[in-house]
Length: 177
Image (tube, rainbow, N blue to C red; front, side, top):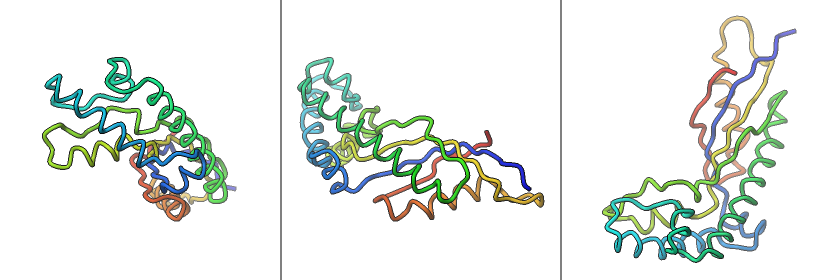
């Protein structure tokens, strides 16, 4: 019997707007657009070359604190939904699937810069709480002694099992555990 090997996997998953709305009662697109509309004037007024994360904007009074709390709550619900959905579906493909960390992209520092031509659209997409970075530990004994690239096997199998569940799914990193 082959020894179980473990691989750490980081992936980015984007839920369909309808899924988020069904789970939370809120449209992630509308939340993202509203956040962008509030962030842009603050960024211009303070002559920033970047857009800050939502928490900073809330601390500065640039966005309504209750709105920030709403986005944070929706983000947490989306994180939990993605965590459960990914684990449930990958458990059919692997002997061990454990979510070790989930981070909603809406609450991170945007990579969009103020002078980009599509800044408002990109910012709205970034602040939309439908996109989650999920770190997993995956175990499998489904390899042989002839040097199967276990990380590649896990990457390909994860994408294959999850691609129908999300608008987009991308494995951003794999590493031995």
